Amino acid sequence: MDISRRDLFKVAGVVAVGAAFGQFGVGEAKSKKVLKLKAAPVVGSKNVTGTKHAGTAAKVYFTDKIDAPHLIKLYGMINGEIYGKVGIKLHTGEPHGPNILPRDMVRAFQAQVPNSNIIETNTLYAGARYTTEGHLETLRTNGWDFCPVDIMDKDGGVNLPVKGGFHLQEVTMGKSLIDYDSVVVLTHFKGHAMGGFGGSLKNIAIGMASGQVGKVQVHGYKRNEMPPPGPYWFDGVNMPLKEEFMERMADSGKATCDYFGKRIVFINVMRRLSVDCDCAGTSATEPTMADVGILASTDILAIDQTCCDLVYTAPDSKDLRERIESRHGLRQLSAMVELKMGNPQYELISVD
Image (tube, rainbow, N blue to C red; front, side, top):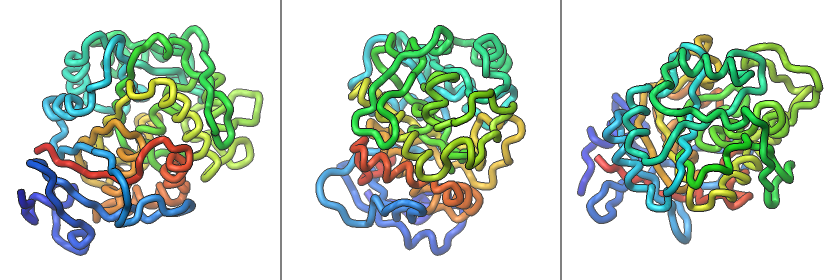
């Protein structure tokens, strides 16, 4: 099946022809469209992709249609090992956050995942989600009231080991995480103030760590007193930034991935691509990059790598690329390679 020039730009989230077209190669696999993207240049870390590779490639499924039917369709392509009690890890956002995933889309999706509910944890920074009581009120404000939401650290934490980590030997996750048989990581892919970008790794590495213990471990926070309110309280004195922070996120993410094994899958929704995380709430910078689509994979590294490649392919991604590079965010990818968390080589398969 050939992909027209028009369709190719549509898949890449591009609306005008130009130099970006030369960055693609197009192949065919069975009846599905297989799209090859030029790898993102790596800043602050070693190159983990390249245009040639030996061995296998992870499958990353893609649609440029951001709606419930396509979200459900993609999930059906990766959910073969998901069973039992299922936690849907979602960033439910600060009050009235403009960029969080559409509630109606998530509601329709959750209804198609048997025995599931949303899982979250409290924040490290002081704010609306710092306490369980405040977090519950924020969930009501933001409309996450169509299914149970388990704030997993409401009763404390549970330690998961980190095998061969860079900095951490264990991470304290929300206590009830181990009550789940499987996890679906449903991520709003966007920028992040410390991580450069927030993809599937960030969603589990920070998002599953307990607010008052695990998140301190992941951030390497050195002060005893509580930081001031708001998401931008970090600095380079009281916690590590750049490469070390990315490595700590990889450590934390590995703990969760190792615990669930094949019973964890990943969906990244590339919409409302602000340079800021949903933890910025109403202060998040308005997106300057067009929506791209939804991606799904059983491989955490492959899906975050693909999203970064899509960002670097898009002609309107200057602001998000600057955010990623200024924080050395691509170190997330090479750190996951070194911890053997997934495959940096992938096939991007369009399901449309």
